[in-house]
Amino acid sequence: MLDQAHPLTAEPPRTFRVEFRETLALAWPLAAANLLQMLVHAIDVIFVARLGDTALAASSLGVAIFGLLLWTGTGLVGAAAPLIAAELGRRRHSVREVRRTVRMALWLSLLVSLVFMGICAAGGPIMRATGQDPELTHRAAGFLLILMWGMAPMIAASVLRIFVSALGRPTIATAITFLALFVNALGNWTLVFGHLGLPALGLHGSALSSVLTSAAMLIAYVVVIQTDRRLRRYHLFGNWWRSEWSRFVEIVRIGTPIGLTILAEAGLFTGAAFLMGRIGEAQLAGHTIALQVAALAFQIPFGVAQAATIRVGLAYGARDRRAIALAGRASLGLGIGFMGLTALGMWLYPATVLSLYVDVGDAKNAALVGFAMQFLVIAAAFQLFDGAQTVAAGVLRGLQDTRIPMLIAVCGYWIAGYGTAIYLGFWTPLQGVGIWIGLAVGLVVVAALLLNRWRVRDRLGLLPSLADR
Image 1 (cartoon, rainbow, N blue to C red):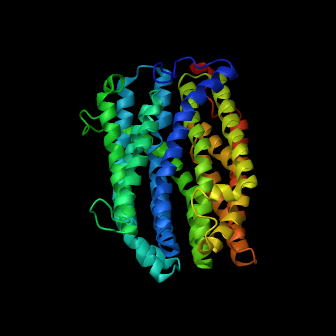
Image 2 (cartoon, one colour):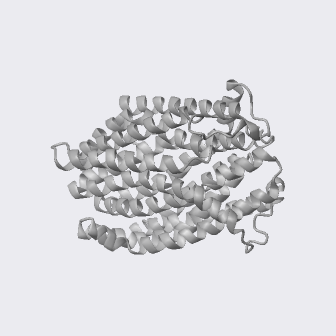
Image 3 (tube, one colour):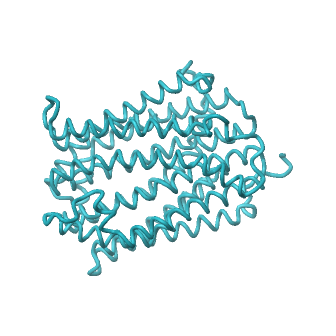
């Protein structure tokens, strides 16, 4: 079992079959945790959807801003993953170096959380500046003022998740996220509609439930790390006030492009939500449901990408070029292969997939479902490219190559993708369908460029020098 034997050794596997098995063993708990995290968010959508289209659209706008900032923050501190992996690749029992990396990543998580909470507090003016409906803006801004308090515990928890995963204990992340699923379900049930003697807070109750859930996850990580014998030996929370600015700067140097890459991708989908809001409330609601489905499928290759960063990072630290190639090949095959299956599911059974989120037979949902069905067909078409781009970005991060992939993401998503979405959405009769075609164009361009960069990694000087072995 993965938790009984550390999968990260100083000498990575020498065959594709073994590497594929090791990558899968590391990836599946991370992918499962990602899926559970999406289900945690899906619970919010399910409960809020029962409040009506207006409440769902308002929460969509609020979550669009919050999620964009949250993903950026987790990407920024995500630099801890390749750094920890490289340290373990150089020396398996590198306790001090790993502890310092985690400590400085936690410092950074607090700093960026404070900045992002300030942006969330200005959510109302931001939404008004984009031309959103005044009533939607008012409700979304109030929702966001509560939700923003979950920012710090969520980003800090992502750092601790990286730590336990890199140490070969990714099932801890799965178990904690599974716990969060029940906490959020109970929170929404009690706070949105008013049960167990609590007042019915509606939309604000859903936001409060998310904050309580994020705090519960952070506490759970701390408790597990402090009580687990193998994890406790790293003394992560001892002398937490001691700074190491060179390490802090290194995390920022590698993590800033990661955060901006995620900002570019998440911004594309967030921007699409704002474009939908200008077209119509029903199209925005349909977009929200279809995007939830696509995002749910995305969590599997995203988990593979997280595992790929660790596997490639380990080989990078050990200066083993062959192991780097094997880790990349196994990860790409695993991630792209799975997305082929999800594409078939969306294409063949769209109504069944949508029924997980909304009652497709209810007449009052007819417009929402109609738009969501159209968008889901396009989502099926770009599944392979979505999987390819996220795993390709993951393997490149394992090589600590983040700056050029960031530029690729910015240009691919915002020039090719968003430009196409604006043109087709507002200058042709396609409207919402045109916006989703724009999303597909952005993913195709970025996937092609990142895969090519991985292919020519040796020529670009991204691999460790043979003289260093």
